[in-house]
Length: 138
Length: 138
DNA sequence: GCTTGACTTAGACATTGTCTATTGTAAGAT
DNA sequence: ATCTTACAATAGACAATGTCTAAGTCAAGC
Ligand SMILES: [Mn+2]
Ligand SMILES: [Mn+2]
Ligand SMILES: [Zn+2]
Ligand SMILES: [Zn+2]
Image (tube, rainbow over all chains, first blue to last red; front, top):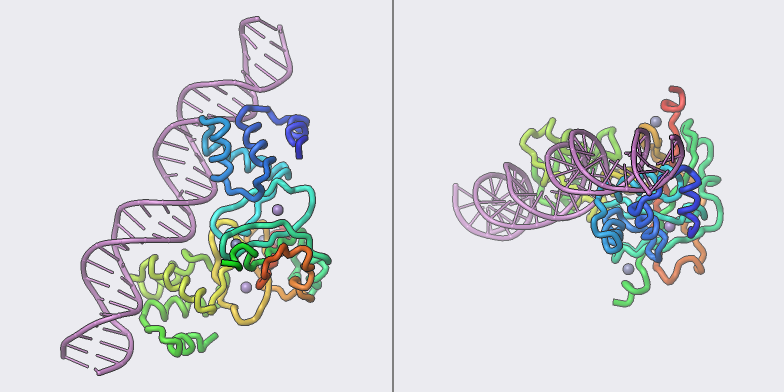
């Protein structure tokens, strides 16, 4: 992920302070941030960055396939910089904590043709829900 | 599903015209409606019903386990009256069409203990994405 | 038929996301 | 180094979705 900026430059991305900051925020320890969380962390480094730019940049990163949009939260979209290693998510229903998980087996193979209704199925998103150890102990 | 109203009455639900209309809308052929779609269909039958009541009633039905909230759409929550037969969803990325599907196998069994991080996992939501036959042919 | 606590309502407010007109600037050309 | 210009950033309006409150209404038990 540290070469994200290089890859983007190679793709003809114009490098600006704002885009660099958004990429750096995504590259940090916090995965699965909402757009607003990305914005507030970006503001810490570049106070004048606007909300619109954060939304634009996130949208571009998604289009480029460098970041995934995940719908684990029923309120806001979350942005996942871990776009290159397929995985799914485990979410605490109480506090919202999110972990990447790697289930065995291929969920796509579990959908027989008779259940595809003529669709061309290209992707599966699996969300496990439960209670995290922290929330269980309180 | 036609005895939904009976079940609710049995649970001490006070029966009002508004709640009856919301239940009737959910009971119709249209599954997976957004709150606003439920409201607009409810208004056809009971013009003075308010948005707040629709949101309240949907929330109550979810709490009672009679309706499911599904996050197939990254914009608005969708409400699924098919709460009593476990299933997952197949979504057209182009037009948003949603189908109920019944994959083989149990996705919960595919998540080994080592990938549960101490969570108590109680539920799995699987969303298959692709292109519906209608959208593919145009 | 009353009474009463639960229900509904209008509309303000909050959150999340999109769009536009204007201003600014990264990067190639000179 | 400076110039040029197409692309990017900005403020803020607007849109869509969801939540809350204070006041009025009514279903259901007596
Ligand atoms: Mn992830
Ligand atoms: Mn369904
Ligand atoms: Zn938790
Ligand atoms: Zn379609």
